[in-house]
Length: 284
Image 1 (spheres, rainbow, N blue to C red):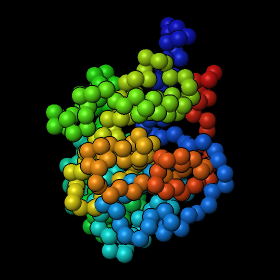
Image 2: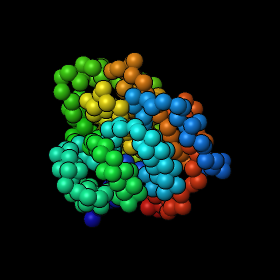
Image 3: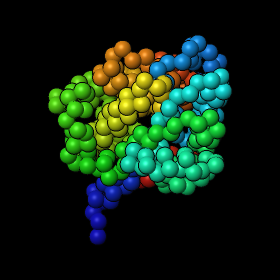
């Protein structure tokens, strides 16, 4: 029979997976205001556009899609990198884009089980309709588990380790900020022994997304990912600047509330999505 401590660890692990892969909500804040797209993204398209999300917030998905649709229908042809597809499935994703007539087919061929794919259907269909390449940007669970066990360098080749300075300790401020986000996002109940590994996994995802974005250059690139990943202070934007400081990058947070504080270049506040408290189970 499991001890009380073991049961709590098990519940915490379950919550960790749910939050890490399904995404957690931003704190409640002031009433949302729809920001005109011209204010979110000035005239002219950046080389790299980082578009965030609260994964289950339908309003945010709609507003983000409209911003992207307007740019694409005006003639923009970026590559679209998506966190929702594991990078190991890139061949499947490319095959689906060639053989599928609609987004549902792409989802069936290359999508995984942990996302609400209907929220991403419009973006995938937009890519099909305008012949925009879709690129898988995320680590698989297996790769993330290896990073948790063996550290960040275990997921990268020697050249990437050099480019992103992974042969050195992470900057203390970055690790501290990531740790704060990880712990808060897991109801402040994550066992200490898990925190470091989960920070490493989050950072590895950010670096992989930055690396995959750079692989698409000189074509323009859009990243579709959670708000934590598109942050310019500790997320993908940070790692892009580390490896390619002259790259023109613009990040937009789609957040519940008005919390920016230097995290994004611009901000779209959202209404708070109604959802069950993900912390109820571990607080019992």
